[in-house]
Length: 357
Image 1 (cartoon, rainbow, N blue to C red):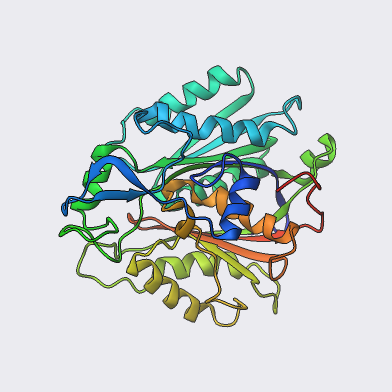
Image 2 (cartoon, rainbow, N blue to C red):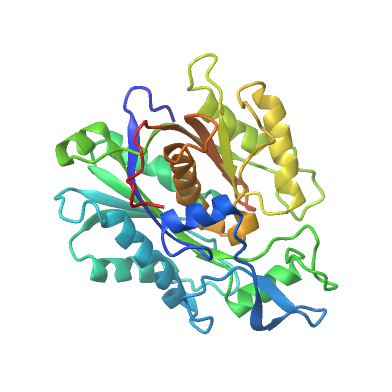
């Protein structure tokens, strides 16, 4: 959706990743190429080798289920709230989660929202949940923008969390031929299962002015698409859904404006690279350096539904720290179930505090 008539901004973020306990540390580690991969202490693949994973090292590997998700998500919310904890406002929640799958409790959404309500009593208003995996954050961001536009809320905390590290989930990944490794059921083009949480506070400009908050980036457009051909079938994925998301986001930009930086959820799976290639060709010259993208899964593994807020924050920090190629960034994500999302960000010209990152 276009943000031309009602600009949306994000002014706070938080994160928990395998390479950092907050967003600044995670961004610095990703920039430096720090690898958060490790061997699972007891899960082995079909070759008898320890599964390679990307785990948050401060969360005990024995912690599972909603407890693990809460250990990732709540500190990320704390970080995002640090600068505006006392601000009285109607703050909505848009929560992105993995889809139903082996090892994921059916009650995950309700359990997490209950944990949030107990930790921050009376702090948040209405909540929306999107259980759609990688692209779920884009659905959450789109809903947050619409709710802000409609005046239903003053701002929205877009939260996203995922963990592939439940033993049942890891067995399922290998059985689906998606586990990166050398076993008979492993796939050299698979992914390293990871976990993370990301949070961004989004609002209109009026909210920022009333409460003295400084935006890190403007959200120029959000694009949503749907891919009809999904991985695991005989139909080749030709990027129609991702192209639709790109078009919906890029068409809102002024003529001649190009994307300087791309941050995405490519994780080693061939179909993601294929669809991106097709989408780039259809986008024409709107991406300044389409092949020079950032895919932080090579540092913190595949983080599933957690991607959007983390990628938004990486794009903003790259500009604030002066290693981005320009102010215009696009982030995108693709769910195995067909949902596609893209968002265009316009970084703001403020410097990061000297004490940060």
